[in-house]
Amino acid sequence: MAAACIFCGKAPESKTKEHIFPQWLLKMTGFHSKDTSVGTNWATGKEIIFPAKNYTFPACDSCNNNFSSLESQVKGIIERLIEDADVNGADLESLLDWFDKIRIGAWLGVSYMNKSSFGLPPNLYINDRVGIKDRYLSITNTYLPEKTLNWSGANTLTFMTSPTALALRVNNLVFVSASTDFLVSKSVGFPFASWEMQMPGSKIGHFKLAPGTGKIKPDCFKLKPYIPGHIIRQPIYNAAREAYPLLYASDHVKMHSYDTNSGIGKLFIQKNQRTRILERNDLFNFQMMEAKSIYGKVPVVKPILELQIEMLKSRLSRMKFVSETERRKQIIAANTIISYTREQIRQYNY
Ligand SMILES: [Zn+2]
Image (cartoon, rainbow, N blue to C red):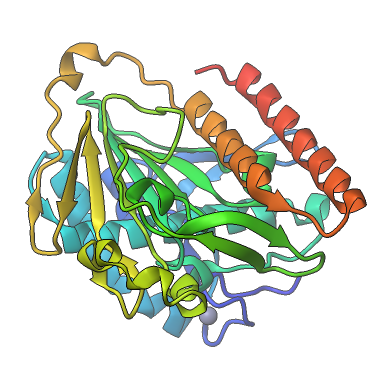
């Protein structure tokens, strides 16, 4: 596979190296001088371990620069979250953008390292996914006074097939980032996909949309991966609005969007049973003192893999297929992926 820029997917112009996990994050967590496991080599079954600071992939100089202000901004935001200081809605949107970048970067990293096992070149890059689809982020504070960095969920067949959900632990914070088409729309009362059809050989799904209910529910998942915690949901519907303008002309959508013309919904933040809708300049504090008495060791791996399975099953349940043969083929493929992932849950039962 020829080297492709991890942002735009083209041959890099004035080639630079982009860290999948940025240097400021490695320094903040004490991993700048440490080795890290970045997953399994699926051909040999061996763990791939090398110095965290060498986990880099090619990028264009200009693509790299486009993200440098986001990096410095997010460094400050994560520092504030670690210390329970306030952040505002605009900060959280930047954080969600950054998690889109990290999730796709981790996926590209695993794909590149396993190119001999999985063959096909990646069909999407970071620029294709930052702020493009509905997104979800949960934030849990363990209040454990330790420096650590680990990410879970990148090394599964579920994730390799589709980079839907990744967990990242940064010192005392555990984040779960998830994103896919219409992930949160239905749960916040927006128009949603009643069915989806994947044309063979096409990268883009075809969706049939249903009108939103206008009702806001507490969560978009059945699983509750990290409790206690805060859950942030943001509907992003630019492409869907172009295809179905009337469905998006509702008062509910207007009232709960920062920008209807660009299809950017507001942030819905959930804690316990309360939903707060945040304006971009509203301050929010993620303090969760109740966690201090509950937390010992936080299971990180199992919940994220279970969440990936839930997302895959939920997508499968709304899929329509061009033929019965295609349906059977896809269901067998999905069941294989799910059973592999369940086996990993058994292996990493923590
Ligand atoms: Zn590029």
